[in-house]
Length: 123
Image (cartoon, rainbow, N blue to C red; front, side, top):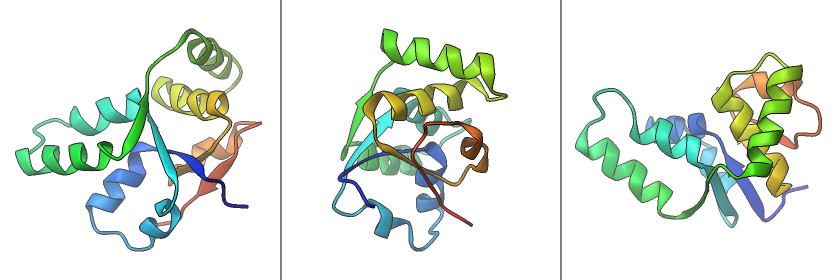
C-alpha cells in the first residue's frame, strides 16, 4: 500500500538527475523526507557542477530534511552492530524507521534490514 510519506535515498535523486524513467511515479503526491546524509551526499559530490548543485537544491527544496537526532543515532548504532551496513546507509535506514515511513531506494543492501518498509526500485 502506498503511504503519503516517504523517505528517499540518495541514489533515487541521482537516477532522477540522470533521466531514469518511472521514478516520478513513486514520488508524486507524497510528502518527501530525506536524511541530512542524503543532502550531504548529493551536494558533496566531488567536483559537482553549479548546474548539478542547483538541480539538487531544487529537488531538496520540496523535501523535509531530517537531521541526526539522538533516537536516530541510537538506532543507527544498533543497525551497525547487527548488520553489515555502511554508516550513511545505517543512518538513512534508522531515519526511515524513526519516521515509520517507507524508504525508496535502488540499493538492494537495504533489503537485509528487518523492520524496514522498503520500496526497492530496479535499474
